[in-house]
Figure 1 (tube, protein in one colour):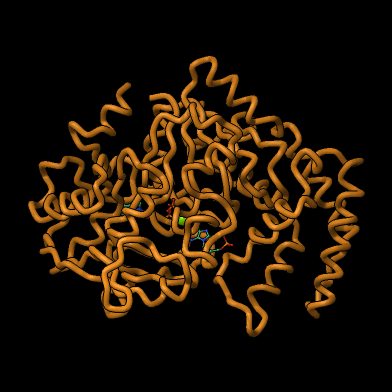
Figure 2: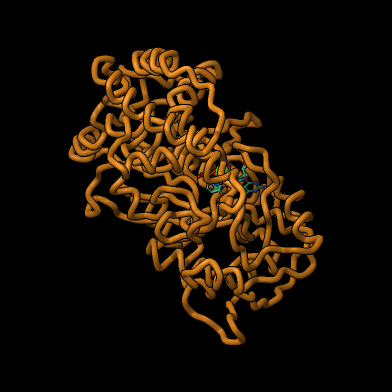
Length: 435
Ligand code: GDP
Ligand code: IMO
Ligand code: MG
């Protein structure tokens, strides 16, 4: 296996961090290609909990190189805090982390601007993580953003910062958002962050190109999920970056011809945080049952996640967009106590079955899920590492998902720990990671 992408097949929080940590053993470099510290990837290793936000989960494996690609938006304060926390936990980060000189920088005024779109009456609130992610990507697309290459050059930073800060001050004033920002103090503070991060900043596209030419193997780690992708997700209830597989090439500066396989991570059910349509949301007591069993609270904001049943049309759609070679199913154990498990097998809209994912928010909100109920297994699968040891109903459930989605299930996770996982014998995934 040379170069592989692992990304979310649903609305985020699928367990990408755990899967990337697990498979990173076989790779030399792990790369994040989009998003920012809106991501929260929780990894448990020997009972110890790590929450990664900007740094790819590969950093937890000694000796691996971690790369933050150009498609990521970086809050330098958050990144420095994350580096320091990991170093305090005994990991060597600074010598194993490369940060793209083309990645854009999040400033505090990006969070203030976010309040305009999220907080004002009459506006559609997305329910964002309030990290300034969207406004930073707006500046990037608006060609006025500030990049890491600028941040680390004090002479370049000053004029760019003044111009951008002035724009923001005008905007905030116009929208009557009280902002007591001390822009001069902010410039000094950020120039200092730049000085501290400078040794890690480089042309990471070139770094990856050279590494691949030397035969090094690269794993790309998605953040968020395909249904939060700015193009392919449930717009406008999405994040502002390209979480889908295509985003890996753009956000890391790597040619599409270098990607060998794409793995989709999906829960055995589904969750979403924030606003937006959710056809298979469990509106009854099962929403709470799943939330409690799966500890479904956001790693970044602590918000309770909305919970629901596995959505086949959604998975088929994200497979169309990403071309998954194999699915990695997480949190099977969370369904252990459920008698009958509904699976959404189709959407109905205006009394008719639809085969395409609706594009408008009105149609998406009007979609009615069609459920098929499967018998539960009512036995513990927690920590099971062999497919043969799974209860028959759990095997049947997985087979059903595989048949319905049309993608093989190559790996099943039965707990948060690294070793609470099984790779399915004879699967394409097994062959992919063996070579
Ligand atoms: P990510 O953002 O996709 O990396 O996912 P998160 O880390 O935000 O959320 C997934 C949560 O589920 C984390 O707390 C993981 O520790 C946990 N988790 C991952 N796989 C499993 C599993 O198979 N079973 C259980 N019970 N928890 C899991
Ligand atoms: P990981 O990588 C789940 C959601 C927010 C909100 C929308 C836009 O841990 O899977 P943003 O702050 O990005 O502008 O918010 O996207 N969101 C996530 N939901 N997991 C994430 O990341 C998310 N990152 C953003 O809740 O609905
Ligand atoms: Mg998460």
